[in-house]
Image (cartoon, rainbow, N blue to C red; front, side):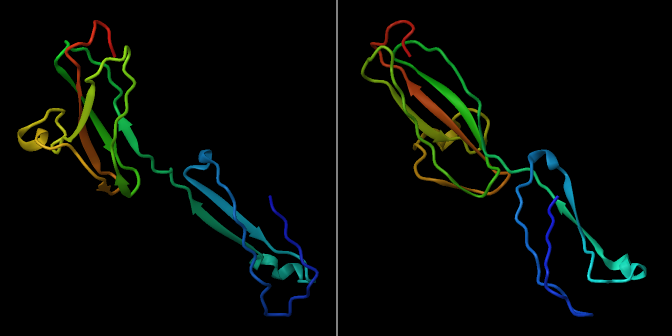
Length: 163
């Protein structure tokens, strides 16, 4: 509850200066918050008090969230590659860029990751999808899905259980 008071007189038929409040709305406030303002005082007769209340219904919308999934774990033989499909679901408009980083254990030279765009989102590199790695950012709008496949090349000298 917020109470605002003023000692300034308000002439008959006039309005007081606007009062603005900025509030943080809890995520548990879904689907809406009803704000009620009540004005009293000024010597107004009780019989005329029926115009002293106003309400505003504020719709609370859930914040859009970008998601990237799934996590994955694969196994492969030395000298081969494993493929990890992922989907980025845009909750917000903007652009998304993809990159990889790795810390091999044990340190064996030759590990490499390459990101490809899976344009039909089927989890496989079809046709020209595996020809060129994805480079640069991809523009997205809310609701868009950007599917990628990460190719993880396992070096031929990788020992059993290397990661």
